[in-house]
Structure formats: C-alpha cells, structure tokens
Length: 327
Image 1 (tube, rainbow, N blue to C red):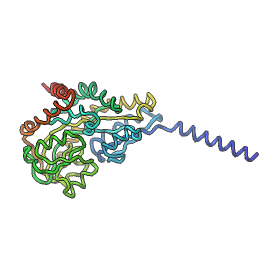
Image 2: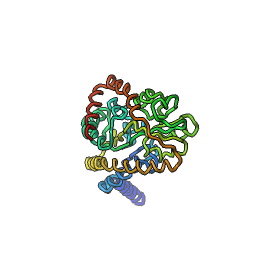
Image 3: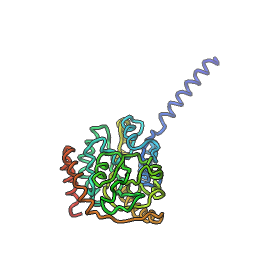
Image 4: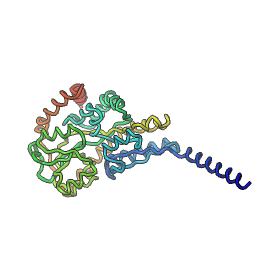
C-alpha cells in the first residue's frame, strides 16, 4: 500500500513539474556587443520593455550585452544554431551576403532621414530577402551609428594623415579596403578586444560611433577624436534557427515591436550623439573636424571595386544615393 502511495505521489509530482514547465514563459535571448549605456544597450532594453509588455506570460525577452553571448561573428553562428534567438549585427552582415556592403560605402548616407528612406526602399525589399535565403530573419532595422576615427598618433584632417596608423576595424572586407585606400593599416578585431589593444599600443586607433566610443571608455586610452563621419551603419534586429519554433503570436509581438522601435532607435541615436560629444571633450579628447571633400575623393576606388565585385552593387549604390537627393 505504501509502495502504491509513493508511486502515485511520484507520478503526481512529475505531472506538476511538467505543468509548471509548460506554463513557464519562453526565454527570448537577445545578444549584442554594446556596453551599458551604449546605443545598442538603450535600444535593446527599450525593445525588451515594450515586447515583454505585449508578451505577458507567454515569453520574456532577456538582453545580454557586452558580448556576453559572443562577438558579432559568434552571435551570427549562434543564431544559425538556435542557441541565441535575436542579435544586433551590423558591419558583420557583409560576411553573410556581399550586398550588405552597400552600407560600407563612404559618405553614402547623408543623415538619419536619408537612412530611414534607404531602410524602407532598399533594406526591407532587397536585403531582407537576401538575408532570409542565408538563414537569417531580419525583423527590424535600427542603428549602429555615424562612425568617426580616434587614435593616439595625431589629429586626422585628411586621408594622408592616416598613413601608417594601425587601426582596428570591425569584421567586413570593405572597411578594410576603405582604410587601406586612405593609407591606414586596418585590422579586423572583435569590439570586446579593442580597449586592451588600444591601451597596450597593439592598435593606434579605431573607428566607431560616439555611442560606442564613450560607453567602451576609449576616451581613457585615446587622445584624438576626428569627426570623419565616414560611414553610417545600420543595426539589423536578426533572428535565426529558433525563430520558426516560436509560436506565431510571439513572432508577431516581437516583429511588431522591432518595427515600432525603428524611429525610436534613430531618436535615441541623435540624442546620444549630442550628449556624448560634449562628454568626450570633457574627458580630455582633442576633437577636430576633417576635410570631408578630400575623404570623398579618396573613396572613389572603393565604390568602383564594390560596383565591379558585387552583383547588383552599382544599382544598390545608385538607388541609395538617389533617395538622398533633396533631403
């Protein structure tokens, strides 16, 4: 009798655990490389707050920043494996499909209004389907930012000032080629490794948006900030293998919130640019404007190579540039 009671109790306990597990919300892991206070951090946290309000007890978005789940390349791999559900890749998307290299073209994007037009007319109808073919589901397009150069050698006024400077760049062939055209010695490196590389002199400089420079504390190990504004990089809210396994209502809430966040991300980015430039100056960085006309002239070979090497590359460039006319 006692044995039967134990068996019944064991079965009841197992059923209770199963019911509890079934009722537990699905965890949606969102990984990114940004430090606390960065644009990636602020946009991801706001997205999670809004999405979780819609999801209720069905699912919960948990944000893992500071490369906790890996750098950009590793996050792409984990999306493919399904061990990370969402990530915010940027430049690294050129390793998925060369067409994403259009956003590596120097001075292509005039401002954030132009960026929003390119998002709606180029990224969503052209690049999103290309990513889908490669196994990635882009559910929203936010921002990484307008990129500038910092270094410890000298102020950068013209491309020739970059000659011989060891410059960290993100993974992606076109950023390397761009800075080679300017005379620098660029090397791809994960963002999580950059501070120490600058501190130890392994790298002389790096290039990033202000919203990555300040939260990454590069002002502590860099003297000069040159406002080159050479590239505007979008950030793609990207899902992978686990996306198709999510319930349709969860997918809908996440996708709707990612799109809802698109103008919000641009607003946060613009505000951060204004705030952080002042903070970087206060931290002792020497800030200078650059001769953008000289940089644009030095960028022509990069455009020519892109048009030659990437199928449909010239059309992507032409369509994107046309959207900036009159804006």
